[in-house]
Image (cartoon, rainbow, N blue to C red):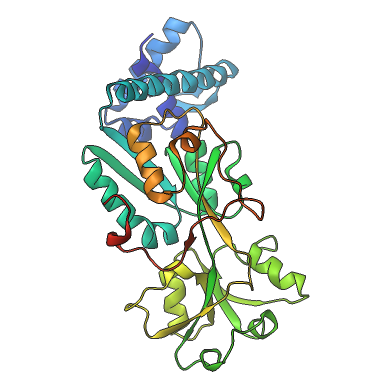
Amino acid sequence: MKLQQLRFFLAVVENGLNITAASEVLFTSQPGVSKQIRLLEDELGLKLFVRRGKRLESLTPAGERVAERAERVLRDVSGIKALADEIRDEPTGQLSLATTQTQARYVLPPVIDCFRRRFPDVDFHLHQGTSEQIAQMIDERRVDFAMLSGESDAFGSLRVLPLYQWDRVILVPRDHELAGLDKKPDLETLAEYPLVTYLFSDRPESSLMSSFTAKGLTPRIAFTARDADVIKTYVRMGLGVGVLASMAVEEGADDDLVAIDASGLFPRLTTWIGFDDDLPLKPSHRAFIQLLAPHLSERQIDGRTGPPEVGPNGPELPLRGGPVGPLEMRGC
């Protein structure tokens, strides 16, 4: 049995039993994929797929069990290769991260720039998506790390480390009546205006909606988007009052808008990085995490000691405000 046969078999499974799609992902021919699968079935003495003519309809019960074991085998092989790289201390390979648009646009550029200068031979792959899409990417092992804001239990069984905290701001045009107030508006005042905010913030369980509900208020959500730049565009159009991350407001680019501090109105949010305990951490992985969170020690990153506790009993995490400039990156 060859590892190539297992890779071809799993590629077919992961591409909806579509051999053509699998061959494109594998950069090989459709007959080549079919041949490797036939060889694997012949060697195992099992039928892995239910077939109707030339079409694959589903996995057989045996195929499902082989797929589960093949995933573990290939994951172990990948782990051995990463371990070998670490033992040799070769700063090569790749690092893949899935995160939201706000983190990708306003936090990560100087971090990635510094990382690439320190590890020029490590390929960095950045994937954007919603929280649900990010969870799926790391669950399917398509990325090494996930970076999300909110509650740490959103990461499921992953090992998580707290990176920093941030507050929201209220964003309005300069001629908006809220811009002329001598103090920040309360939730009762804010509930009188249509709001433009992040995708899924209109869900009852979200921290934004929960803040209003606790006061017996029902906000008017006029528009939601996963992209902070889209939120700012619709605020400029007068569609509503923006509620977004403070780090998404840029000096110079957003001087036509007024950002009103919303700390205390809504819960302070924590951004976390999560990864599977099975991931062998290379020196480049540790360096990337420490660029994001200099307060984390190598022992905490490696799991030899527990991560900092988030909450009233734990140490204060760094508070992220506006976008970080490249000269502010420690170690670059």
